Amino acid sequence: MERVGFVGLGRMGRPMAANLRRKQFALSVFDTVPSATEALEELGASRARSRADLARTSSVVLTMLPGPREVREVVLGPDGLLTHLHPGSLVIDSSTVDPATSDALASACAERGVGFVDAPVGRLASHAERGESLFMVGASDADFARAHPLLAAMGSTIHHCGPPGSGTRMKLVNNHLAVLLCTINAEALALSTRFGLDLERTLEVLHGTTATNGQLKVNWPQKVLAGDTSRGFAIDLAHKDLTLIVDAGNAERVPLPMAAAGRETLSSARARGFGGKDFSALLDAQCDLSALPPPRLKAGTPPG
Image (tube, rainbow, N blue to C red; front, side):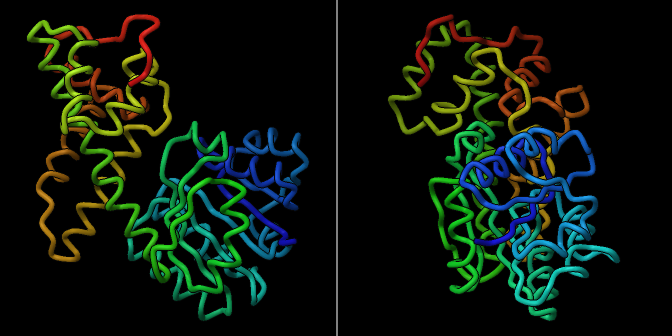
């Protein structure tokens, strides 16, 4: 069995690593916040003293980090993982980054005889906790086959999207829609509130037409509409992703005016203190902007 190292034990990384350990993978973990490793150590993982130590003792290393800057530093930096990995090792990056970063990692890994897989994650932190994540994977056929058992231990749905870099590109397409749907939902429900319409009846109507969407039907009833705006996928991270999406569109000469407008909606929310809240809390940010009470489902209302 592979000797697995995991770097980045935040809201998504920690449950992903925990599921690897529950499936009996030999696991070492590292995070810049030492306390982040405690729950994994209780499950039998070992705490690496440094990234270098983790790389030297692992045949596969997974990274789940906030963004491109952190990924480049951790993997490609002067004392990064790639400096210490043995030829024949495999890097799996599940972070949401820009295509240029995934392409740079793939190239640098190839030069050192190390395999590379980009496998960003779909779905929410709650899915990661249950081992039900969706992975969008960019990899060679051989590296995909090698990574598959690890991904299957952390998720229930795995899509091989193409060669290295394809997973990252697919994730940007996915998050383009997911984040913009939240901005549209927020505006629509704020307008409904201003009109004085009943929230439950509004949702009943919307779910019966093509206006409905996964955020409104699945995520929102469990989060903001239930009064839970604790971070699952934070507005700050959604803003980061829309920035990556707009920049990638510019690089490919694909105009994305809706993404640019949506990013400024998130900029407004962040400026008013909503950045650390779940991205469904864009509803509360919109109501704050409109001086409206944020709508909430009545207790006992079934989701969706």
